[in-house]
Length: 299
Image 1 (cartoon, rainbow, N blue to C red):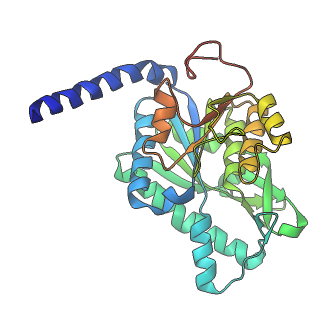
Image 2 (image 1 turned 45 degrees about the horizontal axis):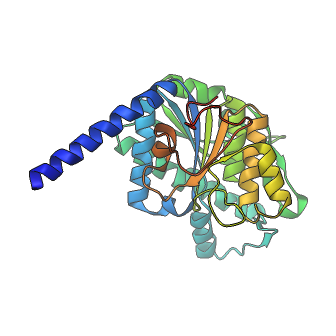
């Protein structure tokens, strides 16, 4: 019986790999920007699983670009240093002391952990921040928020150079100011959307702690157009923390990203399920309705 079960498992594995081949071919050479954040970042097993997924993407011919957050780690360090952190409309007020901690944690701690995790799984990775090679230049988003920035200029050639050389870029969302003297903390989703737009990425995957965009009954909507997203937002169905993510998705699509997917990063192999299976994972947002059943073979 045990041998039969093992045979069945191997057959299932072989069938899964066979079914994934058309999707691997479809994404060969494609740029996929992946925003990594949420609770998965603090879990060693989840971090390793994420790193394996990214390495596999690279090994089958894709060009993954990782952008990460690090809010929980920033909070821990601020508490340890006794720096009080206030919020306005859900966004952290970032004064000079806070932005220094943000830069230290994101570029010196979180970024290097992700780079090391990818290397541990057999990949090649280099950690950057938006300040490196003026990758991301930002301006103040709201005077009340202090050093919280919004990208106003993107210089992504360094990313193309890296992934063309077989290296996976891992980017911390810290940006330089227009005068090169200021440092800005940029929301991770916003940074990922700006980078994806500048690269004209095939996909932007926003890994979150929720399963996707939900309708009025709480069910995940698997396929959406920008018009549907705007209507659901006007009707109050899309609300709270989902609004910044869908706004990022809409802006990225306007900037030339083919499709954006909001999915649960806590789900094992979430990115692979989205890219390499017909069912996909989470909510895909793109400018046109798919013409065929499969989410990934549609234009």
